[in-house]
Image (spheres, rainbow, N blue to C red):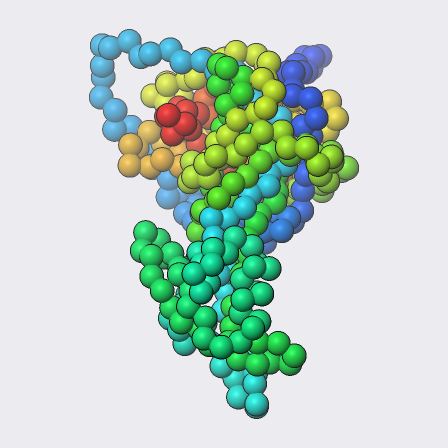
Length: 375
């Protein structure tokens, strides 16, 4: 994808800072590359997105007709601060299946029992399993094990007979029970505690499905550097978790973002949420945290806006034009998922993905869509 020409910042314009919740910084690690890349970053779980359409496939035609009704004015507190993510899956997810070797023969007991990657193991021999260790303990005893699993909305049972391999009984499936990564808060509710972040769901790197969560929490993190993005290799924020105290609760992981609440009310600038019909191409600003200065505003441009009601995500295409951000990060990097997009002083949307072939550009989602999903 060809890079667009960078525009310069207006000379002498001071950069504005926005307040941010105490203790929230940033965390990062790398994930794989695709046509577009989800901007959260992996820890225990890879947080990943499957390849999708190129910008040329995004429809820009509006389907909204003229109306004389005055739209409701809704306000939120501006986000832009980054935080650590800890999620625990609702059951133990089967990430992948593999052959094991026993007595010179290869087999996969899980596959033979009808289990697929993406299934969630709920119980084993009638005992609820919420961790990898709990499931492994039951399987390692050998003999037939009756599993209760969830596949989409379907609940079913399967009997697995683990095979002895090496010095243990194994079922031939890789399982995971948790996720860790980074996200950026897009906005807080008027109460300062509820919040929405990312603008997309957290997915398993193997199944590509949005992770069904049992529980989760936002965590404090500390920045320790930036890897600049370049064509073919997305950049990332680097950092680590600090302290062990939870900052709140994560309650929903959806295709439109993650939603939760903070233990301590947040206090930031109140902004109006721009009606999706009023979002237009042209100059915008990104509210992002890339270092210890906290939330900063950086110049960007909306290149394309889709108001197709059938399309909920990837409705915006944004290009970074801010010289400082380009110099420090190369554009959009992993860890910036959820960065607010401001237009005409109002919250228009959030950055969600980066184009791997052009880190100066990425997808975004309408803020109104995220707010509607929050209820």
